Length: 161
Image 1 (tube, rainbow, N blue to C red):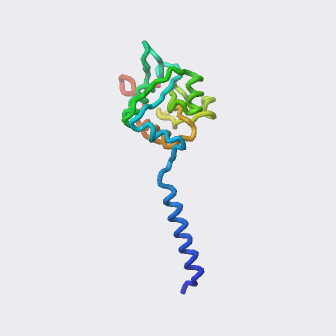
Image 2 (tube, helix red, strand yellow; image 1 turned 90 degrees about the horizontal axis):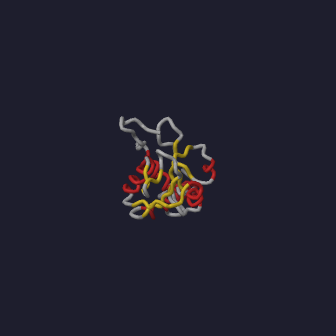
Image 3 (tube, rainbow, N blue to C red; image 1 turned 120 degrees about the horizontal axis):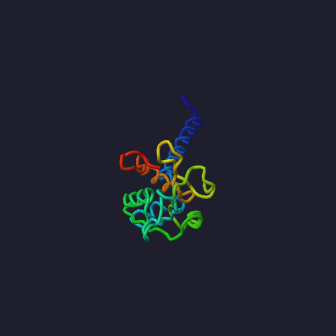
């Protein structure tokens, strides 16, 4: 027969396990609530001028990553508002969480990787990434899930750089 202290220990462990389990309901989390704010809202986007990934032509944003961001926003029932900020200004605004995403042909080894979050490479065989605010993990995971299998394609159907 189990002693009372043994039963108490087992009940205590079960209670601790159940408490820990309920604390894990919403991972990954966004401390700034980015993903929730963007659902049905406005994605604030910036770019680094880098054809064919992202460029401004005749006052409109163009490029393969621009198209991906637009499609991703649509999947969230959101619209994209492209900032006039470009280059280092856009990345600084992203770091300060004044933008939600910056595109423009980044690779994993980019020096900004210490300042902002990067997606996993999304084009097979490359180190190509997009930039998001550091720590907004639910936003990052949602973007990575969308990008999986969404590599930009050229007219022959092959992944393009």
